[in-house]
Length: 406
Ligand code: ATP
Ligand code: 9VF
Ligand code: MG
Image 1 (cartoon, rainbow, N blue to C red):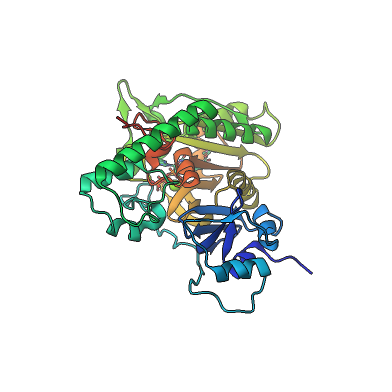
Image 2: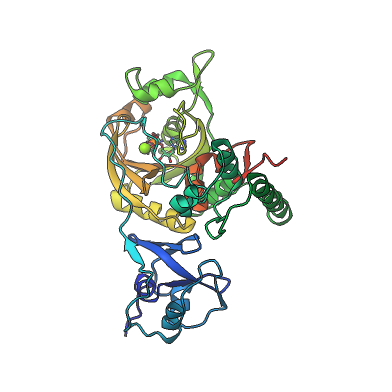
């Protein structure tokens, strides 16, 4: 008999067992192409591959757990059903529902700049997963709420606290927790999340035959025009211009184009290169946009540049990072048609399959494919940060922790 898929096991059991053996009850779960997003009643969000053989599936097939989560408080009925594997009875009062994948963002065609800020997490909620419940019960002023929100991390959950303490008390509890978090980081790992992600991605691509390059951050303004970003194109207004007809790069493509041209006819077919580095764009503020962000752009030129191969790399990459995604068609003014890689409403990447007319201006005459990912967006999703700034270059946050800890 074929084993049940993980989503079927979750649906039938209504519970989840975390790595430390805690039995959680499930508030909600979503199933996408390959992944399941689980929200437990205690407010944890977990993303797992929808696999028959995963640890989670194994745990749900057996009937063992260490203890019940005291914040979820799973009902006796739920626990008995899990332990006895008796699915004939009706569900207990708490119906779990699998909701469909979040509505995808609809973007106007032919635009690279969006004035709308797309957020996928509760940036106004005290605890991202207990948004509505949490905010109503909070007796604080707006500035106090801001302070609490800044001090909270995604792992915190206030929903199980019956009555929230005085602002000063809660503030001091959270300050203490964050100081402890930082000391623990100093003791145990000491890596900056952004730098660590950069290293992981770099290894991932080098191991798969891509050569790493580093090009200049300060580039001739002429490159912007050669990328087709003329004055009438919105991205043109987002460029940080510097003296002497130079500017801060808003993308990695010009440098990569130049490398592809230089490597052509020297390196064997296909040529595969990538760069990870800082890019700059003037943005109207938002929880998904930074003015200084880190882009990964990998590309391949020559044979094998097709949709299937491009998606295969992206799928492997996001599987490696444990990030769920959807694919959406879009178009932009620089490249024409793009394949956008979305996590809910958040664009993680735009990918393109060439050739395109602009290639001639860069001395390229072969098929290519490539994709650009924002690292801070990957961190935002991975760590469930309410705001992209938490994982960015910053003196306000260190690995998602607010540093205003007087
Ligand atoms: P958006 O529509 O979200 O503004 P975009 O389509 O303008 O993004 P691209 O030019 O496709 O962005 O850049 C590739 C990737 O770089 C994006 O998918 C995103 O992950 C990241 N990125 C772009 N702009 C920013 C920014 N201002 N802050 C953080 N990441 C960004
Ligand atoms: C994909 C998005 C033109 C052969 C050197 C590589 C790509 C899209 C990247 C990025 C950008 N393009 N933010 O080009 O891989 O350039 O707008 Si190339
Ligand atoms: Mg894009």
